[in-house]
Structure formats: C-alpha cells, structure tokens
Amino acid sequence: MAIDSKGFSYFDLAQLDGVFSILERKIFTVESILKLIQIINQKKYSDEEEDEENEDEKEKEKEEEKKNNNNKKKKKMKMKKMKIKMNNNKKKKMMKMKKKKMKLKKKTKMKIKMKKKEEK
Image 1 (cartoon, rainbow, N blue to C red):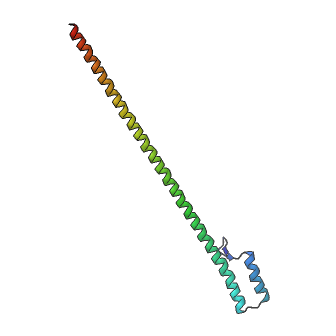
Image 2: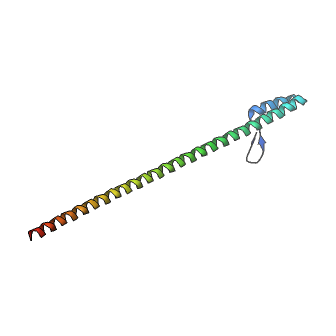
Image 3: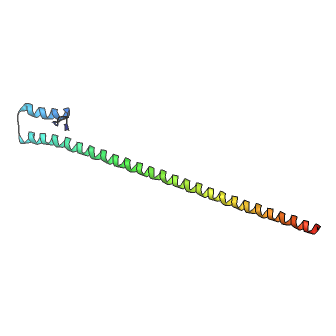
C-alpha cells in the first residue's frame, strides 16, 4: 500500500486484482474478507521489511564510511608522526655534524697555535 501526495492510500495492481475478483463476486464471506485482510497485511509487512532492510543497508554504509574515514585519519596521523620523526632525526644528524665540524675547527686552530708557539 502506498500514499499519494493528497494523503490517499492505494494498492498496486497485483493486489487490486485479488481485491476486485472478490468484489466482483459480491460474496463477502468470512474467507473473502480474511483474504482481503491478508492481501493488505502482506503488502503492509513487505513494505515494512523493505524499509527495515533499506535502513540496515544505510546504517552499514555509514559504519563503513566511518571506519574508512577513521582509517584514513589514522594513516594521516602515522604519516605525520613519521615525518616528524624523520625531521627530528635529520636535525639530530645535522647537529652532530655541526659539532664534529666545530671540534675539527677547534683542533686545527689549536694545532696552528701550537705550531706558532713552537716557531717562536
């Protein structure tokens, strides 16, 4: 059963065939009334099941999107951390190299001074 823009409910053609065949006979027995109710309920429950399935699918999709987004965020954070570590390591290496150079300069200066003193 569906509802149109004006708020009226209607049945699809397959259901209407069963309803019209009962109405054409104009015999309203308990069985025919039960059959009408059964037709209405089948459509009603099938619509509800479809809605539930659609909602479940949407929820699953949302959960997957959240997982994917979380995974992407985690990967980005890992990459940032790796870059920071690499930069820190580079800085440490550069500082070590500068210290070594400074030590070498001091040593050479000291050697030069020592030579000058010896010459005098």
